[in-house]
Length: 427
Image (tube, rainbow, N blue to C red; front, side, top):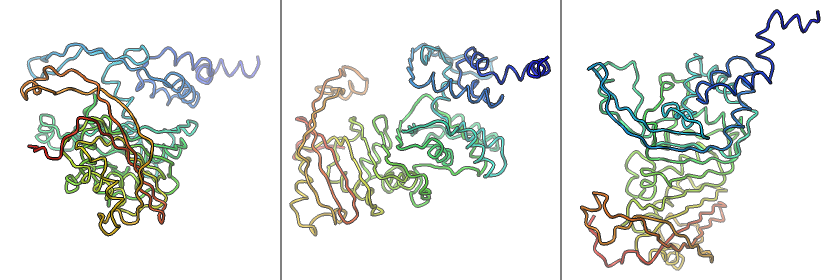
């Protein structure tokens, strides 16, 4: 009998679990629940590698479909009750439980929780993170979805009264993220750009913050004062960061009205915070076309944003401020008026900057709710609000500080329905 056949007879499980073809067949037959599949990576190295191949192949593109069902109250044995929903979620034509769908969007917390459970020291924890995030995956652009409203994690170490109070009246806010997990992703996957997509609310309301019980990870929160956020190691430097505010409420408002929100803990100083976490040469901020405040003058918005962007006198930086939708007529002329003034007549934040208007105009359109000829009652009741198409014309302006090689580009949009400056507005 040959030696190889003898080993198979003695250790048949080894022959199975180390055969790539067989392992791939096993993975094809298991559930599509990503949490269950993740546990299979712990069987052996062959399972881990085959799982990663399977994951890359089946999740290169995701088609997520949502079918709204019915929600009703279910009483459990006369004691406690819960809401039951018949909503359905399909990913690539496979049905998922909504509770298990969370793992697609909160990988950071899941990785941190697994590593904290299996280690006791910070070094061991970081080694566990490196083992869990494979280096054979390349990721040119890393997209981080950041919720502005998640319920604070309930620490089981709290007294029962406090736990019950938080369950009844949860504290919803932007919750911390494990910074080292992000840094390992940047390094292991050779990330070149990062997208920070701020979302006001989404399906997962609870913060999976078990990892915060131990001080093994740095708690990264973009609402913390930027002075307490440490600068990253230069080895984590990337090319570009895009801040996507198209689905944001709080961050969108805090940045657009940073002249108001600078005194509150919030996102007003986000540009400086991002530069400390993600060293980069280019920063883009994409505002939403849904204007949360119709009455801010562009001078207040732009001057305050300039203060935040230029707070640390950055060098070798290009900034793109995109989609600032104006409210008042003639606000589009603000930079033109500044450029005609003497340097000592401008706000101090523009010292050292040369202002110019770029020649090309941008024409876009999007649908928005029409509130024309509607009463306040109709608006509040959500009645008679058809979507109408609005046309906008954009102009681009450029501010250059040659001494620091700093360029700040602005794109602003106006249309024929802006407010007249002589109009009295009641806020």
